[in-house]
Image (cartoon, rainbow over all chains, first blue to last red; front, side, top):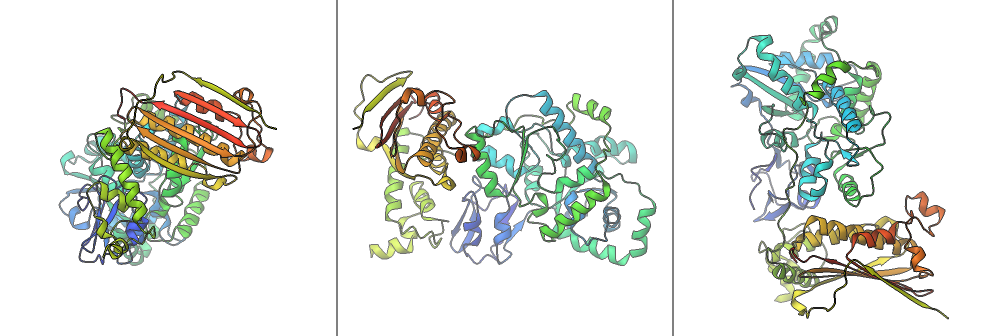
Length: 424
Length: 166
């Protein structure tokens, strides 16, 4: 067990008081309290960020890119998630937010909604070309990918092998920016503005390519104040930004900030959109049982209501959702992606995974089958001796997990205050 | 008066049972309540995870999960209460499902794909397509069913995992 070096969240031991909130909230039971501090078990963590949401002490920190990291980058490019457009008041339009980002210090601001729409068309083409397997599962949420790799390995080949919009946007920029700007490729740093810490893991440890096209991800929480202040201080100039509308927005693309955003474009397909980590787990289990074979595309996002409910957002998700829906209405359903361009990109596999997603299964109780059976029996015996209060006082989220930790040699029966009292 | 019918079906039948010592068998019982649709799938989920923890391959764990899901649903839909007992020993995974319920009058008919006595209400929930028992048989190596009308049904199905761990 270690503090989760591979992962997008870390516990600040200075702030952690060893309460049980994050441990109980963790959907994969990846947190234990050892010596009064929370510890994340690397192999079980899927980077959903639930711990970050539930920590009352603000001790769970996201390992996203900080402003000081950006200083060393000569040419800073930013690709904000469409979620950002819902974080400010109704009067603040996307153009103004993009303008403010330039003011904040980015050399190039790339609007992603067109790529989101492109991604939807690519999904449609992939669905049309592949009759099996069903349902196909969208690849946008990196946590869903980790969840499938770890807990539903048989579903790896259900994942649509198309990179999510943020990666494809960065790929397009990498290919074109050096030529367009005459800036050497090595001087260009491309960053995503993200509503969740998981994007950081998909950048540092991608599951479907050797190296991500992005250099980092900045949390909406961290950049919010800078944008907000810029917008307030430069009111007149901000309004001017509307007089030079250089950016084409896609309504369909902006809608991908919400759960169901990817499926709403697929009019002639049977689709299901699920949001929230527990419901996602439930549905993926049903898919593994073969219960959703009549569905063409399953869109899962582990944050409630989609990316708009990400743990690194500022605005409450209901207000943010209403703003996004308003923007989608303003922009309309017209398509901005040219279908012939799309066909070229798709046929060249420009948007595809470099390699398929591989399962990452957790180890059995023991490699020796007889010993594994003995350990499972022993675990049940231990469980019978535990109080089943699931209080978390032992440092494990519930009694069943403590029994599991004991047979795996990670804990002792005496860790349970009730069992200990009985023994003395 | 009641009558007993039994059908033995399966691809392979073990000629003799190996002597298995208590220590090399893992056994766990799961109670299932009739009519409780909200908990449907919980036993199957637990079994899938248990089998993986015991080192069985994903395909075996999945076949077992699908078969137990169907068995679990049958109890929830038709019986009053029941229990499922999982036993795992090296080389085989066995599931025994017993319920107290109305029983099955004609087992051969019930085994037919598409035959169902599900009510309209159940079908509206998306259940009762008449694939349950057939699906269990399809996913298991040995399948045994006995039923007593007015008393209940007993299923016994086995996965042979020879050549693989346990």
